[in-house]
Length: 314
Ligand SMILES: C[S@@+](CC[C@H](N)C(=O)[O-])C[C@H]1O[C@@H](n2cnc3c(N)ncnc32)[C@H](O)[C@@H]1O
Image (cartoon, rainbow, N blue to C red):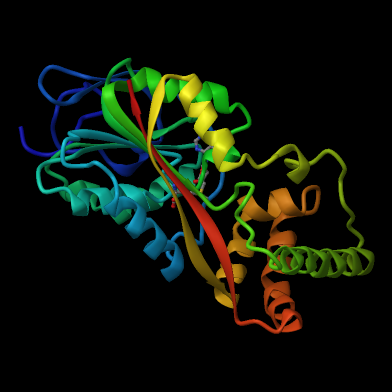
């Protein structure tokens, strides 16, 4: 039967209407080359709006170009968001590539569904709502796991890497990139970020006084609890779970005023750097503060480092 996977029966076929994408399911690869899906539950979260920025697309395209895709038949795009990386991997692969995308955010998965053109898919694409540290996927199921700019968001990175190792076939690859690690700021640029957040905070406090709202302690994730790991710490983490590091690379990306505005608008960013404030207002304030912060620093672009790592499961 041509097409994707019927999530109800696990039989290969045309994908079901969009709402089916949002079931968190247990999935395993079956002998017929499709997927078998069992239990289900749902989780909710928010959309990632900055994934279409030219700088973002370019750094990810360059990253995807380095992946060992030719040997891969099934790839998991972990914390896939709108599946930008998944789409790029499919474009780069000559043969059929089965793609599984998994994310906490239902909204992002909706966009991924449209972005990938899943309904006309002839290979097999599965989008799952779930958490990257408890994968609803059978052992030794996928040839590659790719995680774009999300590894820093996982509080329990040990569980994450252990799960990735479990679902990978022996010799399978785990590749991730991140722009949130110790080393991401080039010397002299950190001040600008502090100024940006400070300006947004001042606006929020003024607005709060005027409109009668204030910061709620204990709301949102505290930025301080998200200690960024260094490249060496990521290497050690992967090695502890039996991975052999193949490449470690750092790429410089020039962020523009528009990049800062779209990153600020992302509620996942605003809820961390301005935790406790109403997220929509925090996003707005960060967006507005971007221009003045760059202007005050006298720069039009801010270079930032992206870390990329590719490792193989031994
Ligand atoms: C910055 S976005 C990156 C999205 C995508 N990988 C990309 O490169 O465009 C981070 C994504 O991680 C997702 N996320 C955060 N914590 C997660 C978790 N524990 N499990 C799965 N996804 C998670 C968010 O919902 C969001 O879509």
